[in-house]
Image (cartoon, rainbow, N blue to C red; front, side, top):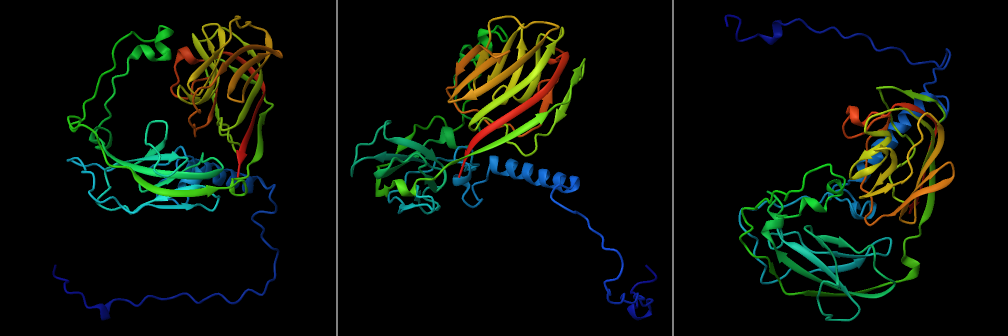
Length: 387
């Protein structure tokens, strides 16, 4: 304290080093990356590609063209309000336009009249069409909706604003689904019991619907439909994996192994005594991605919300060639070229953004999921539609 205040003029002056002279260009050049085949460049590129897939798999609502990038997985956010949002006496003005790809797009001001309301979007074939469950094509809690499934021709639209605090307050979602409807129950994994029913503090309020706001129509022509092309990518590993009470993880760079389109997983496998529900390959878990499992002695291809199970027992100590395929909405398993299981998907598979697990379950690693044996000639082939 005795040294305060400091006299800045008495402090030593900083000595600056002289600036180096201009480079005359002499000497051997230093090249960081010589070509696109450089291993360092490939590693950097894979990080960028993987990060891009991660971001675009779940875009935020404030990202440009978020709905056009990923229509079924946009983070819209939610308004948390302590009291129900009333239906506005005067609805906002709704605009109906076409996007750059020729898709109908409805927008309206994001103001205090509608924040906290659910907007039901309806499509019809004539003006002032009758509103009902069959005309409803979607809902949103934002101020924007893009109709990705609009048929060619003239389409009429209407918006109904709904006040339903039990769904929009953000504290919980009221649901009374019976646990017996779960697939796991039928397999004896969990006991039968009623799921806990959460009650929202605002669930005492009954939902209220506003009057339909008829917007008008737009014409969707064949020329403006998004032209799709097929993109094929392949991930291969020719190494031989000897698994005994252990597992490996591998990033799948340069390929989207999610089942957005067609998917094929093939490998040679020799099974040894393993866990009760051993998982040779897992690119996801119960409701995301997919995995292949030795489920109590038979093959299981879990993808989406279905189990594709074989009936014949898995041979132990013998090499077999296994292939799990998803094509035209149907999952199949082939063993040594023979189809041994098939099942129809009834919902699109959800995304998995993690690594490929070899010899264990991706969600949690437990002894019952441990695969013991040998895997070789792994090949994952993905064919998906892109713009």
